[in-house]
Length: 266
Ligand SMILES: NC(=O)c1ccc[n+]([C@@H]2O[C@H](COP(=O)([O-])OP(=O)(O)OC[C@H]3O[C@@H](n4cnc5c(N)ncnc54)[C@H](OP(=O)(O)O)[C@@H]3O)[C@@H](O)[C@H]2O)c1
Image (cartoon, rainbow, N blue to C red; front, side, top):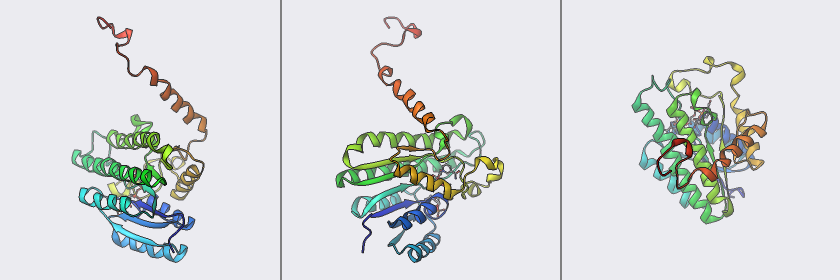
């Protein structure tokens, strides 16, 4: 029997945040499609969750820096009408500061964190809007709000994800489609080990357990939040930042430069 909730397609499901979403969504009763490169880990997770939750799970191994592989995942989002939820999560972190990092590695990061995320979000938005039903969860990062404090290319990829989510929301909100950007702070996963780093370089008080992060993000989704920052104590701070940004709106495009630039005929 297919799940009445439909199927959640989760990218980066082999470890960390994606694997935790897989666990939580299976236990909520979603069928799953698990995407990442490591097919063996995906199969092991699929067997465990099938046993524990009794839902239907498919494994779709894909390297999302490979554009042909991304198209295969896109096709699944478009053609499989059971898919009701995309968790657009796969991503990699930086090897160091922007001044120390390898430009070719940063290109790979953009390919995964931006190009693939965009293709899958667009495919899901188009398919879900046509079906009048669906939810897109895009995993950004708090560094979208504090680019001064982290690798610039990584922060920029996450600002892209936040911006994309806000823009998609404005296009699909009247069409039965929900969108959420999740902005984790430091979250204990494999992300830094994969690039030779460790969470030990940060104060423990800044690093959240991955289960808590995902549970808070899902609670934010249940509350109907467009932007969820699991560690932010006072939601009024995010509201104020959003209102300040939107207040710029009426003055961002005029036929004359502002007076302070003293442009002739301005
Ligand atoms: N942990 C944090 O502190 C933190 C904070 C803010 C945002 N985030 C974001 O959270 C997301 C998940 O990261 P995580 O912390 O859970 O890290 P993680 O444990 O390293 O997991 C990353 C996932 O992405 C997959 N992946 C990596 N390269 C891939 C590729 N080329 N194609 C397909 N899948 C690929 C990995 O699986 P395979 O190796 O099997 O492909 C793995 O499943 C990322 O977008 C990250 O930027 C993390």
